[in-house]
Amino acid sequence: MRESILPRMHTNTQDIVLGGIIKHVQDKKMVIVLGEPGEGKTITVLDFCAQNPFPSYYYRCSPNTTMNSLLIFIANAIGIRVVGSNDELQNRIQKKLQQNPDYCFVFDEAEYLAYGNGTKIDVLRQIFDETDVPIILCGTYVLKDLISGERKKKADKTHNRPQVFRRLRKEEFELIEEQEILDYLTLLEENYAVLFDKRVKQDLVALCRDRQSGGLGNFIEIIELIFSFVRPEWITISKQLNNKNKRTLHDHDEAAQTFTAIKQDKELPTQQQKPKDKLNPIDITQLKPIYIDMTILKDALRHKMTM
Image (cartoon, rainbow, N blue to C red; front, top):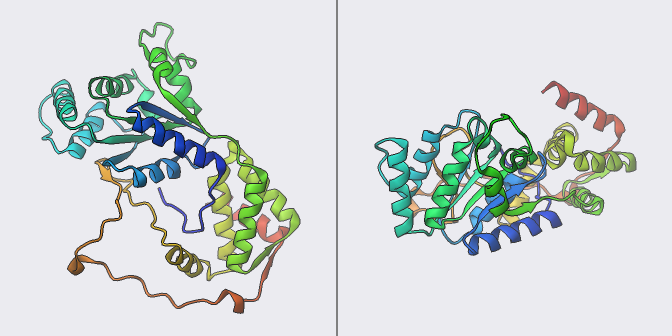
């Protein structure tokens, strides 16, 4: 996952969900985080990982995620050898976590764990039951349907996932408020020397609140395209803002099907520190404001359709 370098839009629903996750993890519970695509689920759970005082490990599930790859991820995270059958590996994982339960595991796009015979979800529940190590499942409402049993894939299903779903602590994303989006667009106008046409603002608000078309994620991509057309300096400006606000982008490897630890803002030894990119400062007050009208928005939308 690529996190946008634009300023973050912090929404009330994200704050509520993040607070809920923190509380449930403190209580040593298994959590499910639900929302439509593009509502900020991934960013929110990564925010949690960065704030959690205990080691937090993030895994982005995919159609290729197997039981073995799931167990290898957990084994690598807690530092045990990957040997033996899946059952043997699971037992050794549980023993290690019983001895040291101060971990937390986040499984994003977790609906992929529920496909097939669904035993991957069951194994995570077993690990949680045996160790009380918090586990977070993050996904769309497809995940809810699959776990709760509302989406019956087989008439003769015998799994007990509906019971599992009732035991989960649940956090759900609400629709982003219109005023939150307008406030964010005002922030962009102030920081990037642009002016959005009133109709453009209305359409952008509608795009951001359209859950079926990508919601917040789609909205941010459109803003990036618009800025690339009219404000080519936007990347440098964004980096200046990130440096000023001491914002660190989340660090994880989407491609690697091995464990990826979230950095806890630890400093590298001096000899290992990477040189920072040198920026040629841009004075926003010296830039002429650029007017963003419907023609520019339509160009951005057409361009996105061809990407």
